[in-house]
Length: 224
Image (cartoon, rainbow, N blue to C red; front, side, top):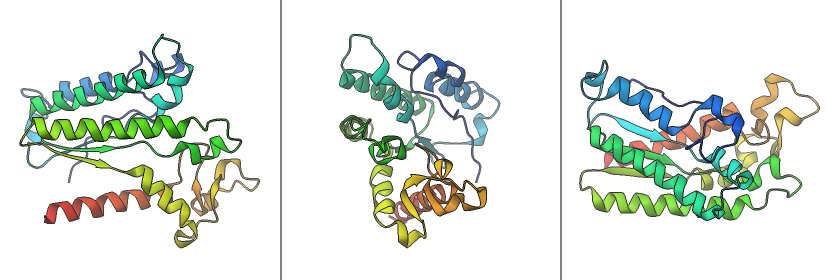
């Protein structure tokens, strides 16, 4: 199996709605162009993939959710979310036009439960993420109806976070609320004792649990 990674950590879907410091991380438009210039028909690596053997995964929107509350562009928060999700699915259709048929879209985690919200300063995340994730589901259903040969999966990482946090002892975490980076005894060897690495990111162990769950989902779908 080959992995082609065009993701850029810290990026947003569109720099139009991102805070200024995001510009060094680029956006989905830039990442799509990286893919297009290398993997589309006639390009260097076009023969390395085809419609049947390739899964395109998109996990974006988290940084946008954090930024749009500080952007003043005369749109409501929900209007900005609509705009962001439309861009995501526009790019999915662009990849579809090049030959991509299989897509895995990961929704937004429950950041209202993250250490960043320990003082309830960001309770508004809950409603905004709920709206964003519901819109992902709606757009995916519309795309599935539009194209007979498309496979599109929405992975509910939001629910998976909540499940792990509720059952954190089952996974041998010592905490589901505290961040390792903010702990008094911040020793790297103890990182995987925590679900949260820092205010908004999860630990390596937590990421492995998520990855294994996604893999099990894909295997179950492949059997069907």
